[in-house]
Image (cartoon, rainbow, N blue to C red; front, side):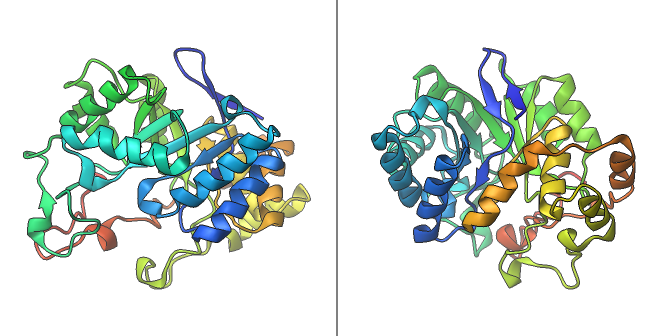
Length: 316
């Protein structure tokens, strides 16, 4: 399997298990099964509401000796209600407690959006904190402090545009080491990939299969089903692979990490088996034509109130 390299020499496995939308009991079984079947990269977040169960799986597998803690790359994310500098490290310590770990390999600022500390999802305008009240640079400096304290090995961001990354670059002495964003053939984000490459920022692709298991209220009317795309299905048939395996392999070959989510044991295994496939130049040329700049996760449904639509959260 390919890895993503960091400046200090650390290497992150390119294919990991995502845990967004995974129900608590199911996610515990999924993480345990993944680790026992070769996964060495698990992606988590406080807002997923299942880090306790993920932590139970970690403890079970690590205590058994089957897999060592230092062999597994664990990522988690800071939620939007802990952006104030005094709230960042306490939020991180809660995640560490829930995951039953002493440190994280990677900690990300989940969104470039700030809420009041007592708000999980805003319903009113006043439940937001403006970026004048809590600048992204303030949150970022607190995350760098967490790294200095040894609570995390690497820090980064998620859902950041190149514009927001560039603004942060002007305000900090240390750039994010990772940007986790939605990436798939319908949303290839070549300009962002180029920007991150130029500035030494790794990229992780979330929703690489089109996030078809999102709740109905998160979905748009008549949104395209990526796994049913004719080109993807044709390439899958050509390589005797599943459409999911082709999408995962495409992301890996682009030099990004990719974190498909599943709680189905068979699909968990199949997703990792994608590393055994290859795609040729013709495959890449055909997939390149699929880009329609289509987002499945727009942010508008989560962060919309009367005065805060966040329609331009990605600076587009």
